Amino acid sequence: MKESVLFWPARLKGLTLFILDETKVPGQVTYLKVRRYQEAIRAVVDMKTRAFGQFLTVCYTFILEMRKAKGLSRNAQMRLLKRVALAFNRSRPTFPFEEVTSMVLGLAGKVSSSPRFYEDFLCAMEGFLEKGIRAKRYQRAQEAASLIKDGDTILTHCNVSGELPLVAEFCRQHKKRVKFLATETRPYFQGSRLTAWELDREGFDVTLIPDNAVAKVMSDGEVDCVLVGSDRSAANGDFANKIGTFQIALLARYFKVPFYCLAQSSKKLASGRDIPIEVRKDEEILSFAGRRLAPRGVAAFYPGFDVVPHEFVTRHISLDGQMTKG
Amino acid sequence: MTKKIPLIFGCPSESFYAKFNAPRAFVAELRPGLEGMKQVSGELLKKGVKPVVICDNMMAFCMERGLVSGVHIFSAQVRGSRALCRTGSLIAAICARHHGIPVVLHKTLKQPSAVSMSLLKIGGIKVASAKIKTYVPALEEIPLDLIDRTVEPFKKEG
Image 1 (cartoon, rainbow over the protein chains, first blue to last red):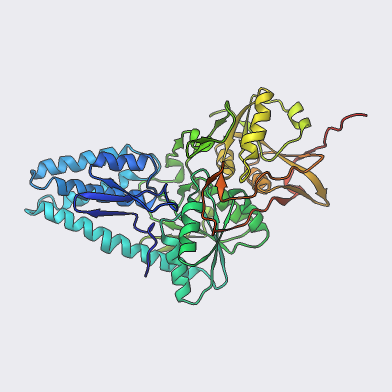
Image 2 (tube, rainbow over the protein chains, first blue to last red):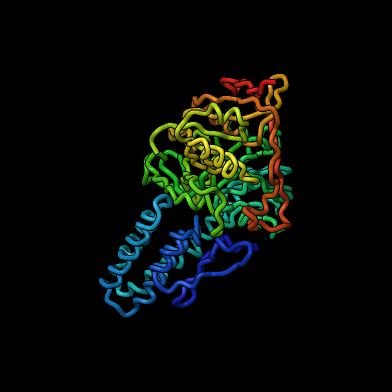
């Protein structure tokens, strides 16, 4: 099955990590060349990569740094992994970096007594990504497609890191015709630049709408279901996603439209109230590509994410293939 | 941000600005033309009100966090039980109702037309391929049962 470039937006070749610069898509499909973990952190902080791209960047950066540390003592290698983990944990607040880095350190801990620590760690990480995560994302897309009916129009927000074209492709294989409404997703336009672009590129029917038209299309009966991704989940099923997702969930409930979430379950935080929300610089709203849009003297407020309470979710479709009611 | 402030969604008329009395206000930016960010904010600044611009998708978040004291929307046309408002007003009204925040409908003498209907650019900069289909409804109907109070337009004498 053909994958969107956004489905696996980072790749490791030798001692260079290539990270898709998502801020340049669709104008250019270019990759940042990263050779040190500090450069990977910079790519995360500058939002060159996001969502699943952040997860891949963390995992591949560990592999990269380990490859560079070949020949060092096991203790030195473990110290290096811990240093990388700490740096990622401090990068951005909402995405669960600590959960990902703890998982990697746990994996390193499991093979730390092996005489082939270096080889076993790399082998475990590569297997985890290629056979584990990739396969699970395919499975999740297939589960999502099973919820969609022939003729449905699906409203989505932001970008689900290349998983939506996969959902659409599974629908196509089952002879289900589907259409998408993509919100433009201000202020970074992930809906315009990424979602609409990748769906159109793969030949699917997509229409871009402004974020403020969601109630209009729902009240006109033009939306059959909502399908969004998630950046972080809590144990009770609440989840955080790009700002605007909560608003859509609330409207879906008001207009009785099913709301589906592609999630990765986690038990680390009890509820969505515990998820820290990143507040970014107001210039990111008031300017675009270096051009000032607002009059001088105007302030802005830019929360990067919001939290959808579990009771607004019709179905969570998680990476382990489970579908749970909200 | 700790104190609750009003949220303005739409393009007010002169009488609104004349009576508006708050030190700060959230202003929805109003894609695609950004009239909220540009014109509404500019008018508020002239009146000594500090505008805090938010994207149109941030209204529910601000309400849920207890940052919004009331919502102001605008309409030049009320027919039966519905008011014709700038698209997005329905989101503001439904989210406000959910959070128990009062919604004030200000009747205006004329409906301002959107300055731009293109989603493909912002500030002249391209953000989406010209091949992408877009749908930009300018106006939508708000059921009056979502409105807590209606303010009639101020008419000049003579």
